[in-house]
Length: 432
Image (cartoon, rainbow, N blue to C red; front, side, top):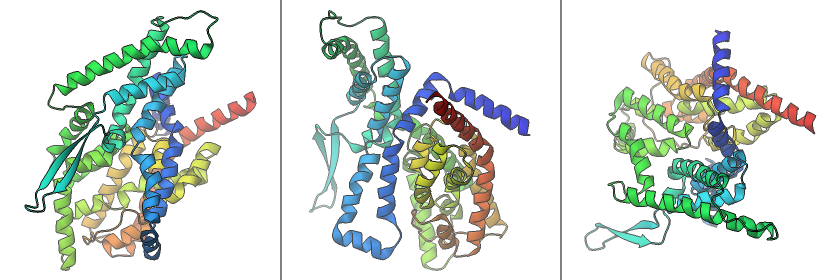
């Protein structure tokens, strides 16, 4: 068994070292500080202490704390595009800053500058949709646009580098200052890149999708729309969310919006049953919103803190622990990273569905109490969430058991990335 795991880890490590996978991985690592900073303010804003929350509301600090959160999350696609382009240009020995600017421009060419606002007609109560020109919808540059940001960062930069390599540029005499010369060298390649992306934008505008953001988003949603409720629907909801997150797309946003009708209906029925003291009619959907399906991130952070030999992961674990304890996983998603980390792909994809099935099975045979249907804050610590969800203190023991299960699941794969990070740190020390 150990030999099979070792062979699997070797294969995933080799895959991770492929050029474009390495570029994307390094890009997400380079912007990890943004998500970590945003998570700190998210934690401060969502601490489940009522006097603290009241203080934030009364003083207006609540709105102030929302600013860095928005800067970190609502512009993530822009950061990703810039980072991927920068790393791609470095890989192909071209000026990374110029390439990043070109790639961002290409991304913006594919981004519609049209937004919608909604007003309510006071006479009829109907919604009035207003179209606003020359505005950038936040959805398109936030988590929803990350996948397009990756594509633009890769494709626009690769084309830009290719044109430079083929000398498709304006070459000035050596007597011209280098900063002026570089500006003219990038004019023609940049113009060609913009022209190609402009044609692509026009082509998609002729389709029913209208924009690239809609095209990508609807294609991702399509497999989920046909999924019904029940246990199978819950599993698909969980697995699809993790799968999309792994590739940098906000999995929760895609899966929730695709299955919102099912989730809202189930949640409303559960809460209505709880209000009159009846059993939750959809316990499996209550379970998908619980803490147990997200214990993998916390378990990985604990491995970093207590078992990491590399300074990189030990430091990340200490920084990410407070956020992970309150259900905020972005520092690990973009810091480890889990995004495009094929070494951690297997435990990451198995953690949530297996934990869900084990917990669901424990509830069916009576070891663990079923969810009551009560609405529980997503930002409570996992142990507390479990107790409130089931109204049983045995949930504390079950949470610890599931953490132990996830620690065992992640352990061999984490040791592989930790060993590699330690080797890189030792090599760097020797070279210095």
